[in-house]
Length: 335
Image (tube, rainbow, N blue to C red):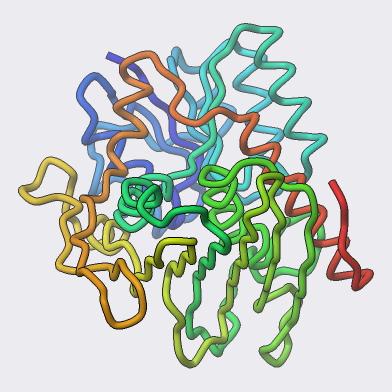
């Protein structure tokens, strides 16, 4: 069994990591770190066999894998401690507050021969898996549009909303990490970045409305949106090619399923009634989405493979840094 310690039991730890770890054959969740009494009670109820410990106590345990699902400002500190102990480590996105810090972590992991990976779970979203299957039917892709839009008009008391740069909060770090990662996975390296960032909600300390335009080296243009203040949603994906287009609305349903207590071993996990549209103008075909498959991340780890190359997460951070610079100086940034 792979003995796993989980740092953090907020949304990432409680909804994603703990359920997926305990659903993976060959993995044993032995310890959870959370200082919040309410979350401690939730963890004990959901995972009675796991110890509730402090971070120092966790690093003193005999573990095979440490999962860092803490606030962004602590990702580098905890990942480095795991590497120094020679323990394989999963870091939730964003990998680090900067590409330089992320590169230092990767260099340290390689030097110590410690497996290191980043939790880019949305590579296994139903709509993204579907797009990967059908993108070849579009001919030469000209434009990729991707959105994560929400209606959250009130600011909530969470570190993601805090203005201290050390928190690495805001939507560009949060949802942007997914948007950029998916664009790079589909269409490869980027040669230039243009971005717009706004604080739309009264009292907002960080960006809550973001647009990023990428020009890939192969000529594809990716247009990416993230918003916490969208009173109406655009399509999740819209992809325009020389032979046709693909469009799909809505969001992958796995997060809601995990939060509701469902698990990947349940029947029909990841299957949706949602469909995409493939074709030209009114001559379209309804495309059933591929089943979502978040469980594949930890299944790959259990099999001794690294599911996400951290070098890709560094490339995404370089794009995000260029986007911050572009928005701040109102210019296109060349990479």
